[in-house]
Image 1: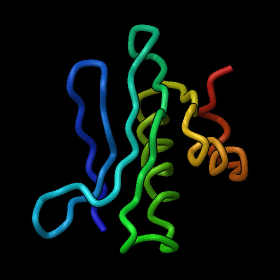
Image 2: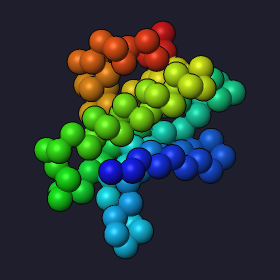
Image 3: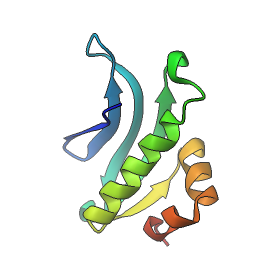
Length: 96
């Protein structure tokens, strides 16, 4: 599945589109601190994708984005927080 990233001003999302172009999985965020930090505020996956690791893939895409852009993540979304907390190799991008 192809995870895409889209930003509009200070808000953004990592998402997967279904065949009809509608988002069937998403992790949304907003930028703060002049763009040096993103707050992940929501992750949602369509029922048809539940249990397939898609949510974790979205979080990983966010982590990769943070590393490439030298920014930090604040995970307000409970799912994203759990994934990052349980994945030691993701913790380097957590904001202090």
